Structure formats: structure tokens, C-alpha cells
Image (cartoon, rainbow, N blue to C red; front, side, top):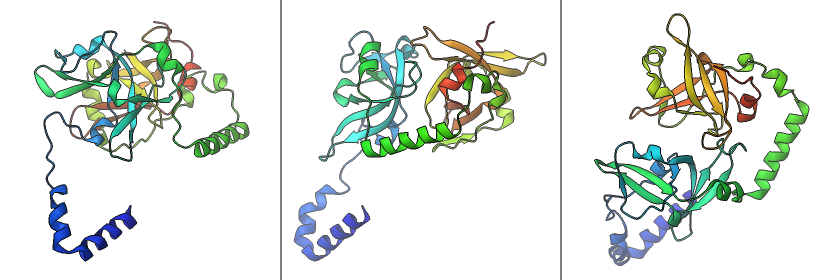
Length: 282
């Protein structure tokens, strides 16, 4: 990229005023308009599935997105050589019970839905099904790199093979992660104590690679009235077939968006290891 920019600068310098006048309209004239997106805003946005077809210009009431199924998070964007967004790379891990996998979704299939009383509160919605997502080809940006990475992972697993069922007979094998994410900061212990169950329950739990490993279903308190454990629902699809497991709340790291009240919950585990924990029974 640096080489390209340097070459461009040389061309402008040698082309003179005529070239500059002819192309001046290409720079600094585009303004951000209502309804536009920054690509940086798309990364990390959730995509929802609606059983009914969503039309252009559709709006919802506050909280209306709860009627839809949350199917995944945008991990990346595919841009054509002409600068058009062709598709998004959607991480659909966890809820399929298969571990996170990336699939592509054409931008033509995504509808932008706004909240009636807040035009800045927008949601991305598609119309699909469990079967379509399960059968969608896994997106692989570079086959050679992916194969090399997979070989390295398999080699490492062979050298350090551990019986997950034994290692995860309880959550003693877990340690509190130390994750960092752009736009987020770890909250102080005093703020953790002030979080309400409403803020925590229903939140996704992420692993070290930002893959979804489960969802917080409920909280358990000790005799002092403080949260001692979180019950994480693992696997399943759309709430069916999930396995609840209990982990110490102190082993969950909480990050908060620096510009709002968006919280992310991290645990040093994978979905498979959480599924190996004993099932929690109330």
C-alpha cells in the first residue's frame, strides 16, 4: 500500500495543474449521509434471522429484535476490486453445536432494519434456516495458510494430548483470561458488583479467538448475596439441546465498550471443553 501511494504522489507531482483540476472532484467531496455505514461499524455487528421476509424500509419497535434468532457475528467484509461490498464473513459458531465456522452472506441478502424511535439503532436481518447455515460451505480465505495452520494445530494436539473429560471434570482447569479488544476496556471490580442480572443473563460468552462458546443463562449467588457462579448454556440450536454448565464467575473476564454500555464476557475455554463439564442441575 505504501508503494502504491508513493507512486500516486509522483504522478500528481509531474502531471501539473491540469491533472489536479480534472481530478480534484474525487477527493474530499464525499459526505457521510443518513443511512450510510462505516465498514468499521459492520465488523462485530450481529446478524439476525427472521422467519418472515423483511422488506426495504422495515422498522421495529424498541426491543423488537428479540423476536428474531441471533445467528452470528460479522467477522470480516469481502470487497471487490471495484470497491463494492460483495459479502460479509459471518461467524456462526456455537449455536450449531459445531464450533465456530465462517460462512459468507451476500450483501444483497441482508436487510437493514431501523428502530422506529431511534434511526441510529440498526439491525442486520436475513431470512434463512438452520439447514441452510449447516450446509453452507466454510469460507476459507487462503487454503494453503489454513491447511498449514490446521496441520500445526493437529501436531500440537498430538504432542499435548489430554483427556478433556478428566481435565474438565470441574472448572478448576479454567483460569481467568486477559483479553484485549479494540474499543473495549476491562471494567473495575467495583463496577462488576454493580452489574445487574439483566445486563449479564442472555449475554454471549466468547473464547480467546472471539469465537462464541456459550450464553449466560442464569447466575448463582452465595450466602453473602454475591454472584458466585454463572450457568452457561453450551451447544444446541435456538435454545434446543443446550447443556447448562456452571463455572466460577471470577473466572469470567468482562470488557466494556469505551463509548457505551456494551459488555463482552470472555472465558479461557472452548465450546468442546465447556461441554465436557458436568451438566448443571438446578
